[in-house]
Length: 220
Length: 354
Image (cartoon, rainbow over all chains, first blue to last red; front, side, top):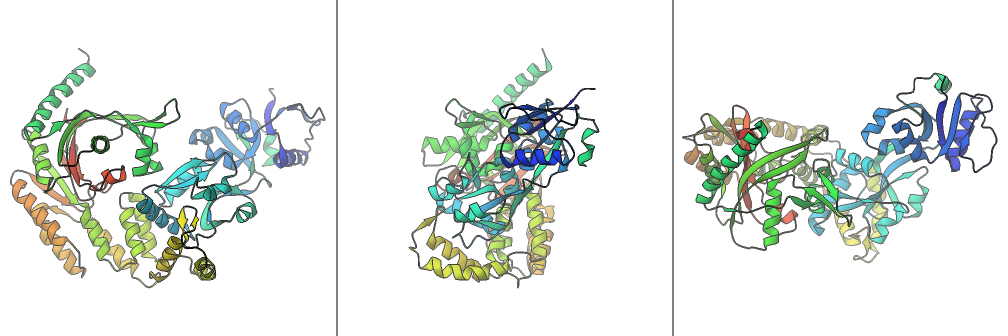
């Protein structure tokens, strides 16, 4: 029987919580060098484990070089639909909670909801002859959400980090970003609009749709 | 000779004949660029458009698209030429669009456009296109004026923000239908949040009015907030307006009868529609000049999916196949970076014709 190729996040809380969740099912990682990317469980020889970046885990599940892995729902949903055809959510886990939200400058007091944003975006285009820019690390989810809510007059600005700063540096007018408590947005003078939740995300145990094993049913 | 080659030869021969007809009517041939700056397309149609255009990045990272539409390519060329007078232009070429499954569809089109005309161009365009089809029997024209829908919405007892929303989203049928559902139930805004904002308003009023927050001035934010508060929210009859809109969109009659039918509709619903007499006189005029040789149908919902049509729009069909389509697009040149310029044009779908 071939072993299950399992990917776990390589850094931070996602890594710690993933290790904890497997330990809770009596699958404890054998101690090796902290620089070693590969791991095995003390209690089972059925797994070949590897620590990878959370995004990389999705890529490897999609191309079939991993059978299972822990990563964020937001990362899967942002990728093209083909990925969702190849990857199945086995279990939504109890950590890594975060929402992808639409946030505007706090002082835009006339913008409370998406209907307001839709109106302001049209007025903005008429006045300045350009579209409002939305800075985001999640262009696909943002675009689909805004278009489905009637906000058509916008342009996506790709962001690699510090997205909260964009409206105050002239690089964008509003943002979408992932947040767990909203405190970073508040500290940066941004406000989540009332119906602006794009996605409720958490860490998930994903499996490749080709994977037919039963070993991970303990998580169901 | 292969079927594809015969088809190509046929298209070339037919296009030569059609361009000759256009030339005799005073249209000058222009060769259109096959590549368009993607930014121009998104500026006009938003990010959604990228899904339907074939886009690439050049070595400098600039995004370019294969032209998805020849009218847009003509408008861009007109802007770049910096001409100011009336231009009568004709073209021949392919438009490239992706369907929902991301497969590429190529449309071979031959068309004519009148840009910045001082007089009404609709008869010249329609008669020019019809002259191409004069040997074909049983063709039918379906016609509408999209300005009539705007005038109808503006005549309804609705908050201004709702009127704008309905007009802006008319071309997106699914979302428009969702808006009608929301209007039917008067679902709109969060009143509690607006109360809280009154306190913040006082703080904002103390700020420099020209201060820019997220590319918008404090003055702009305050003005819109106050306008929003004054606009009625709950006490308007949304369901009555929804019924009127739905009934209007069902109107479909021979053009010769459209005047009476529309007038009856207006009377029955006790509406005062601005510009209605000019629109009906335009219909009457076209019917007098073209209706004796041709079946013309007025269809109140025709042309809505073409986002840039602003007024009269038409389609020429034979046995449910659309041979040509055209319309008025008075805002397109401005949204592509030119001046506000009236324009009217139509294109023949060579794939269907052959």
